[in-house]
Every structure is written in structure tokens, then in C-alpha cells.
Length: 576
Image 1 (cartoon, rainbow, N blue to C red):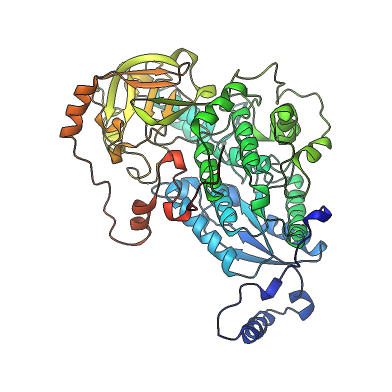
Image 2 (image 1 turned 90 degrees about the vertical axis):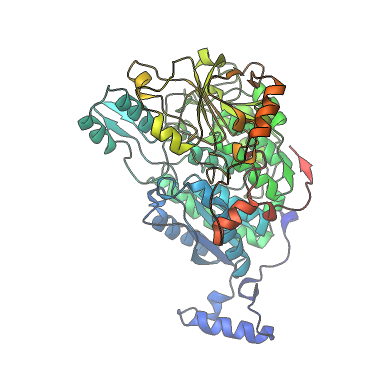
């Protein structure tokens, strides 16, 4: 740590004493109880580093948490600190009903309050699965205690009949083949056991990998810590080094407010677009920035996207996997390629600037991270759309879309909600053609609830069996970062709030133009006004008590990160 970061000494066990009306008695009582676990006064006088344990048998993405914790502890003790493990909420994508996004803000509140309530001078946050990292960074931003993010790392890839496979882009690929009749029951059962070869997060550039890269780009995790696979020695070394760094951050007083600056978020946005990152990354980055009083403007995101090509050859935009990115130099290789467009004076958890960290990177010949003059895709992976169907914006992952569909006008085939879609999508009598546009309503933050990843509408079985693999699909929901297709997402305002999407009817014409950044409902204003007069907003869900009631009362729209309004600061201090 540089000398200019030195601040007041860590307060350790004296931090955040329980209120008994007598501070000295509170400390006396705290020490008495913790000594019951065998601690000495020497141990209790050291810098305390909390370790947020998100290990759970329901979360195989965090299956290496016990090993990571031991490595973090080792690093903390090597630096002279005292590691203390504490549990928090853990969210696994495929084990969370109705959707993991519904629980992200709950995890953020849980993590923030435990950081505040317990005596720690710094905290190491073990995240990995999609919503865990954004929840932890939202919490860290609000608590403003020295914090470092450590991701669990990506799973290893497997092999199916000689073909390399990995979750979860290949999950969707094989399921599409199965729906189209090209894969039978026996093979889909066989591939089900081959897609996930180890614990860890998805092995492609899905949301988990995107958030790992964003954390490193923000400077809130160690350099070159995003890409190491979960079960490798590199991942364990990153854990040990995170523990050591946390002690150094505590002693220097290096808090998130010094790291999570406007410049850091601009760097992270550019990286998100250059890696072909998940569309969910936009929502999460917006929520994290919002906790710092920083507004992320979609027009600015789009401007950055137009000048930032996709450089990383990873699925779903490319062909490779996260361990290939690690072997190619990890995120530092991407940052090196983008160096001239980054804020190099942005601070990192090491106490050094991004530029200083990049000075230590030695580039070498590889074919996973492409140079700027030979990109995977000529502009950023995500494009932001506007129009009378999405007045406050929508997005499309253009790097994973079908080129022939990015300029398209078609007839709307409308599903009122997810239940309606499930009931009719495979009906042989469904009136649908390959050049139609599938529209799904009421899967937004409130309508879902929780904005489920149902925006990846399946191709109707009658068309899938004819070989149709992509169609334009539009919704107010999300899709997995591992998915590919010409899919318009995050239409804002959502249908449940009476947004224009709620007024779309079967047979309406819709125009999508990625070139013009336009999403237009070809229905005249007078007809739309008549429809609005007839429209009765749906009461989305019954919520009389508890977290569910809080969620419906407080959740914001996609353009502000779907955070709870009462968790955001009262004023916006700056705009990206």
C-alpha cells in the first residue's frame, strides 16, 4: 500500500459494540464470549478480517468455498490478521424460486447489515453464481468497509461424444436440438451428465463470468483473479492473496468509496462490452453504481459500445471457454488491449492504480483475446434500443444475435405472461411463422416477479422441428448471459406498470433496427390511446406481508438496476 493511503489504525474487536449502556462492559462481555472459542488476547488484538461464507449444498457454483476459506485464512494470518468466517445468504441460479433476481436485493441487505453489525476491519466476499457478486458489491458499496471480492471461479469443461462442452451455452444448444427432434431422450440424458465437469460457475461468458471480469475491472478484486477455474491452484493462490490484501486494506483504510468511482465504472462498462458480457451485467453494474450515487446512462453505454469492439472469443459470442481466457492471460490481456481507452489512474484493492498494475503485464501470442484491429465483433456486445415500445430503453446482445434478424419487421405473436407462453408455445395450432416476432409480457421486475430469465423464449416446437433456430423475441424480462439469439430484453417501463408493451396485440407490426437503435410498434397513436383507455393494469401478485410485500413496494425498473428504492442514496452525485 502507498504511504498516502495510511489512515487510522483498525479498531478490531472494539468496532460496533453491542449497546449495553456501558462501552467498556460491552467490550468485556464480547471478549469473554469469544474467548470461549479458545482465542487469546494476542489474537483478539489483531486486525480482524471477516470472510463472507456463501458455501451451500444448494449452490454447486460455490462448491469450493471450504477450500477458498482455508486459503483466505492463511493469507490473513500471514499478514498478521485474525480471520473470522461468517455465513450469509447464498443464491444459486437454478435453485432459487421464482428467480434468483428476486433474491439479489435480500442478499445485498443481509450482507451489508452483517458487515455493519459485526466487528471487522475488512471483509473478503466470496461470490460466484450470477446474483451473488452484484449483491455483495452493492452491500460493500453501502457499508463502505474495506472490502475485496473473491469469485469462486469457473467450472471445468466436459466432453460429449468427442465434443467439448460446458454450461450453460451448450445446455441451451443441446436442449434446442432436443426440442427440434435432432437429439433423442437417451442422448439428452447422456449429455446432462457431461455438461458440468466440476464445481464452479458457468464456463462461458455468462453472467457469473461477466461479473467476475467486472469486479476485476472495477478494481475491487485482485488483478488476474477473474478467470482462474474453480478447482485450480491459481484459484487457491488468489484466495490466499485476497486474505493478505484485505489486511493491508484495513491498515491503509482503503474503502470502496476510493475504488468504486465514476472512472472505475466507465472502465467496467468498456470491459463488459469488450468481453461480449452478459446483458444482466448492465442491470447489476447500474445497481452497484447506484449505491455510490452514480447514474449509468444507457445512451452513454451505447456510445461506449459503438466504439468498443468485442475482443474475447468466448461463448456465446465466440467459441471458447473461461479456462481458455485464463490461459491467454486472463482479464489483464483484455485490459492491455483496451489500455488507451481506460482510466489508468483508477485505484485498485492493491493500493496501486490500474495503470501501474497493467505495467506489470507481459503480453504474449495467443488467439483468445483479439487485438482492436481484428475483433470478434466490430462494436460492443450490447446495443441499447429506444422507441415507442421502449420509451425508457431496452437492450439486445447483438454479438450473439443472428445478423439477418437485426434489421427486421414482423408480425407480433403475443403471450400475456409466462404461463400463457408455456401453455401455447408448442401447440401445433399456434398461428406463428419463422419471420414473426414473439412477444412475452409481464415478466419484468414486478410482473415476474423478479424479472426472470424467461426472455429467452423457446422457438415454437412446430418451427424448431422445421430447423428454425432463431427468431426475434421481445420481453420486459431477462435472459441468461449464456444464451444466444436475436432477443430484445429489459423493455422499460414493464407491462405490469402499463408500459407500451402491455398494449401490444397479436398481428401488430413491430420494427427492430439495431443499426438505428430503434424498437417501434407500428400502431398509430390514436389506436394506442384507445387501447390504453380500455387497459386495466393487472394486479401482479398477492403480497400481504414479508419480503414479498417489500419487494413489490420498493423494486425499481431495469434502467435503475432493479434495486430497492430505499437502499439507494437520496442524491445522484455523478453520471457515467
